[in-house]
Length: 302
Image (cartoon, rainbow, N blue to C red; front, side):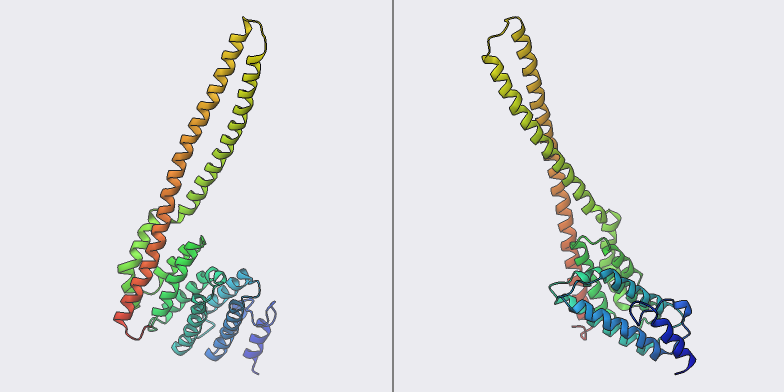
């Protein structure tokens, strides 16, 4: 083992997981085989973790590890060439394609941002690869993240539109599909869930206030009828009853106002829900349309 390999071994065995890179800066410049060996260990751990539905997945750890891979690839230490990139992308696509068949796909989905980051990074240095499958997977996970209300969906989109423009697939979907998503983003589609939550919270508060008003109205009406049966001073009773009736009427008016306000909030919530569903449907249609175009333009794509 030469000094370079010894240094590499020392660096990658100091972390919690033996193969983790603690500091890219401390690494020497590595040969492609050495770099691919490091990345393979990361991908082996990623695949075994994502494939094991019986265990609780530490998503944050996986994201940190994928960030390390992306940083390593971006550094001048990895010295990866076309054949190395090709094997890496094929392996990564294979891992994330499992998420399409896995019922428990939340860990796949929550790490999709990092998957997108690696694809974006590699595409800048290796534009000759056929990224059709990769982009199809990103479109799938972007839709799943939005559906699961994962805020990172927009980061997947940003990585997607940042992929090299020299890629034929990117030229296709940027001109025909990604611009539509961009228009939705500019119109605030990423805020729809927050607005929906806000409206539902307001509706809950209105419901609680109406319930309290109903209870107070019941008590005051009972008290009013009880007092009406009691013998009282003829001069005092009309004034007291008039005041009580006025208060009851004010409570009824407040209840009516709240009911109308609630109806307005429900209508707004329904509109937001329609917009969310419309965008969800469009994401599905965009992915299908993009994949159809890819199959027709490249018969080798399955």
